[in-house]
Image (cartoon, rainbow over all chains, first blue to last red; front, side, top):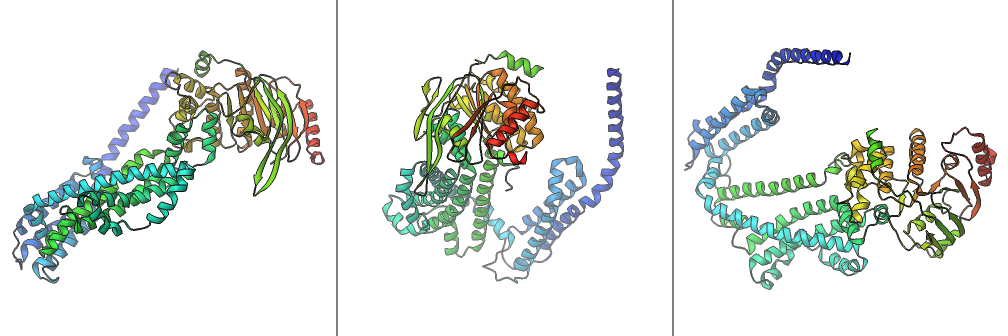
Length: 346
Length: 265
């Protein structure tokens, strides 16, 4: 009896699946065109950008105009092919569908930029370089730019890791121990709100090198928000958690490591995020003033030579690095605080 | 069936401890003035007994439980577990609070494992966590996070987290107070079953006269703050009990009378 009904159910399920597959294919074809409409327009817009590069003569002397146009045509082709391939590309396709409006708008923006700078000079020239001159920087000045990136990342990473670690440990100690709080809290109140950049003049002559001075300043800028938020996180842990853990036989070390810190972690991440933001500011200032390396220094140097294209190129790289760092931090948080999904809306 | 077999395979030392509450008085300092909460409370509990503590809201019953748990020390008097004075928290006396207070960052399994982990014996005793989860019927939810559980399920996890330590004295501080009435009735029966099976001594604080009579061997009625013992009533009915039992109804009327609420009866 049961075998019969089971096989019947399977057969039913199979026929239902076939039916869905049969009716599904024409359906998806019928819907792929209107859904891919934006994709087609985006592709056309990129063709338009490529043509705008070639149609009029450049009003200045730039070497990468043709390559830029070629790149635009390649991008246009890629968008078109991906749109036509549609659902066969699976997840990539849904990503493309979602980004199609942005692809379209960025092509329009680039066209406008190209026309307003390289072709008709509506924007005053040295200050507003065309896209191809920024491409030129990436191809021709790559070694120096890479060196600057490496220097910046090293400085930032060192200072941030030191500041975050010290801040976290200080915050936990203040939140946990009343006597540590008594001594550290006033110092923190006094020194913490001071912008880290205010220390620049002192830091540069008290530290043996401008590099160590900058590391200290970045650590300081990171450390303050991390300390304060870790502390408030630890201090706001409900006593009920400690009671439960204590009746189950927890020792003080367990209460700190397995109760206070995990409970405070959401606050800690807010502190890490704020610290990241303020440390970026310190990094750039420190590089501009003291350290003779890094993207901040590159910006300063480019401005000195009136190399505005280099400035924009460095700014773009800087912004990619900063947003990349923040994305990385958010990803880490999402992994560590997966238990908050459904409790808190980010 | 499977769940039962697994739980049975683990041998639990089915021994409750005796508890002596000897002339306990306690007070709180609130804004410089002293607020007495317990006044010369004196009673003993035999090993394996189920005691319900009843009294008006805020009379100090929960404070007494905190003292028994060792979370606070009394101003005067001594508490003895099996004759030894209570000096601090110890996993032989485990509390289940009104709120489940599960750790939201831990899965159900890891919440239940908390006690064994804190005592540093989890590595060799993992099977006890599985057995405790089976006992409360939540094995399928071992990987869930607390926010995914209903109120009743969360309180069951809290119960499992207490039971995994094989407590000699289980301290229940209004554990069913916040549950809906249907879940409450189910869990009352579950608590009786667990108690009968394990043989631990149980101390239950509740506001619910019916619950006290349904569960306990003895009901101790407290006065208003500072709490003093008003009556110590033996509930001489066998388990499983029935809510419609006329003897329980009679006891209930007596107790409500002691609490000054008989006019509503």
